[in-house]
Image 1 (tube, each protein chain N blue to C red):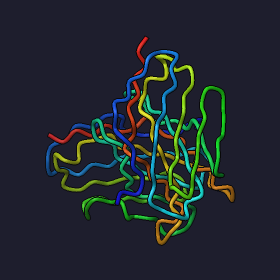
Image 2 (tube, one colour; image 1 turned 135 degrees about the vertical axis):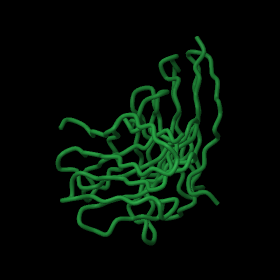
Image 3 (cartoon, rainbow over the protein chains, first blue to last red; image 1 turned 90 degrees about the vertical axis):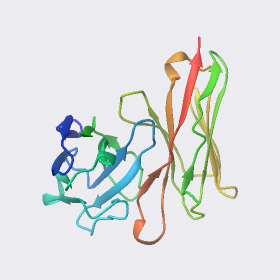
Length: 116
Length: 114
């Protein structure tokens, strides 16, 4: 597609349920990031995939959070046993990370998660 | 120490004034620095990148980098109400397992008053 696509755009769930958020990056982009943004806050890094390398999971807040990237393209962020503090906008971004390491990320519109 | 720090603001400037946004970072060997703009309810978008000490100008925007002081700033000349947004400083880390990771500050909210 032309840009980074995320789904669902909005998700309301009950505490304790599992949710899956999907990200389809720009074709050809090797790097994919997940960030979380709570109301009025900055971007909190969650996880970073670069090509076929092992992902950097250092930002995942707990073992309830996991992510995978299949075939170097689509990524799914899974939150198990959701808690109210998980409510936030989950942003996915992709980047063409070549030698110059431009750092230009192209963001999707985000998935707004509300845990009741 | 947080890796990328910014004053949260809000920073309020009158239309036509210069807005100055500041950012400090903790990774001494970082080489790549970025400013993203985020309008309310929207996703961030890249507006400036800077890699060398000194100033880099792009239209009304000037990024300034001082690696010795671990300081990067963004100046917006002739500020317009349409510049009202949150400005996020971002740095690529170059150490350990997080090499290549882009870390954001919490952002400074800028309000340009007509």
